[in-house]
Amino acid sequence: MTDPIDRAGIILCLISLATLILIPAVGSNYLVDVTTEILIYSLFALSLNVIIGYSGNVSFGHAAYFAIGGYTNAILLTTYAWPLVASLLASITVTMFITGIVAYFCTRLTDIYFAMLTLAFSMLVWAIAFKWRSVTGGDDGFVGITIPEILDQRINFYYFTVLVVVFSTWILWLICHSAFARSLLAVRENPTRAGFVGINTRLMRWWAFVVAGTFAGLAGALFAMLHRGMYVESAFWTQSATVLIMTLLGGMFSFFGPAIGAATLFLLERITNEYTEYWPTVLGLILIVILLFLPDGLVGLVTKIRNYWTREH
Amino acid sequence: MEPFLEFIRENLGSPGLAILISNPQFAFIQLLNSISMGMNYFIIAAGLSLIFGVLKVINFAHGAFYMFGAYITYSVTELMGLSFFWAVLAAAIGLMLMALIIERCLFQFIYDKEHLMQLLLTFALVLILGDLAKIIWGTDQYSVAYPAGLAGATNLGITFYPSYRLMLCVLGPAIFIALWLFIERTRWGRITKAATQDRDMLSALGINVPVIYTIVFLIGSALAGMGGALASPFNSPAPGMDANIIVECFVIVIIGGLGSLWGTFVGALIFGLVFNFGSVIVPNAQDVFAFLLLLIVLLIRPWGLYGRAESEGQ
Image 1 (spheres, chains in turn green, orange):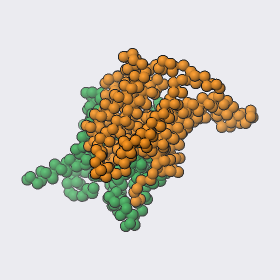
Image 2 (cartoon, chains in turn orange, red):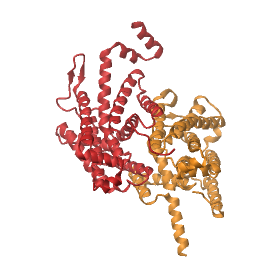
Image 3 (spheres, helix red, strand yellow):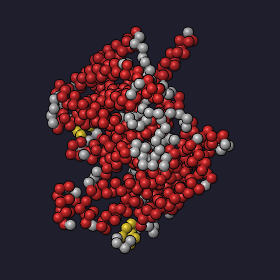
Image 4 (cartoon, helix red, strand yellow):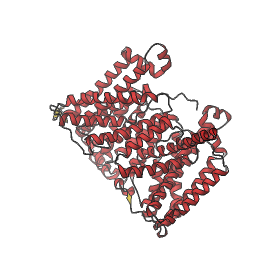
């Protein structure tokens, strides 16, 4: 689970960062748009992994917090014309608050019951977004979000997203490499024993849930700004499943795995849609392959290949 | 009475509630709507619950099975011109065959895997089956005619009510009793019950457990297909119907308690009541009511009305 902060890791991080900064220099609008969206989904998947990878609980309703953040940001920016920073902070706070309440109830359960309850809460959020037409726009979606003029330009919004996502990832990294994360891992591996050592297992899981939900809310807020709109599909349970697949594809036992999974899945979807309308089947087959043959995801696969290589030579 | 109704209309903003109180005939029709809807859902959710009870797999693809049941009914009645009865039978048998293939080729390898893996594998099936349905039936919305003889309304004394829905009110409890008798009163039922308790012990006693698993999965899937067939006259087969029904079935089985047949029956009835009366009292908010109901139940009894607490030391 721990990623050793070795020289290779630091170099890799710097290269990725430099690539992100240089991407607009290529001059392709399409590339910038795709990268922006990938960054947002990466943050979404990274946040989910705090519950799944670190606390070992499978949330099947993570899209709810993404949607709450997105809708809050959309409503505050447009309906109430708040300034961007205030709106973003408020979106995070609202998501954190709602996640806190939901987490209080969900952490009473574990395993399959936990998954089902998170699913139920997310569908409640979906139903409210769907039916509360006067505020959320119902199934037409919340369209026409006003964003500050300076971010109206593609490149500026791109750098803004890079800034927010990199900063959030750094915070998540700190959280996932703190004593708190160590306790979480203990809870994941053996809840009974962790309890005996004196860890308040439920409180630990509650915190993990809140951290995950909050960052998902931030990702949702960015998503709403990127698309100048927020739609009910973002809260539907299939969206929760998609982000779960991203996390799994990258590898949930590594910090950066989910981000890699998000990028891979997003690009695969784009490419597949060029050739066939049956992306769901492709996704289903990918999922079966991961589940049966790659339980540790792409990161696990790379590690396996590297180990094999170093042993041979 | 009239000032009271006026108060409800004016202050609660719910003309539906006022009609409900002042018009017993309307209330009775809503009650029958709730029961018939609940019974249709029970038939589907019973399959889900049965499969979870024995196999311990939450089958997301159950909704897709339901959708296939509805589509098969359309093909058999409208395209082949056979009667509705045969269509229901064809849906049940068709889904059994599909389930047999899925269980033998895929599910049997995941029984000892983590729950997350199982859940996601069934989700992979949802994706693939959804596309398969699109390839076979396209993206049109089809309509299925009510079966001859049940297309009209029956006089119940105080009101007329659609015969088809009345039939559902009878069929649901009949299936419930049949399933209950099967599980409680037959040797196979007892073995099935034993399989929910201790798989290894049952195997050591000389019972072929994989066969039990397959049979339970087939029965559960056939119920989904049948439920889809029975729903098709008022719920037109169309893409996307699988994603909605599965969440509603989850709500029902969680309210009742996962794996409990009796719980599923009660859960389906409650769901029907809340959905129908909720939509009368606050129009258009029935989904919100359904999920709120689920949350309230879970707050009071985290494992559902008839569920047992999980045996984990937390």
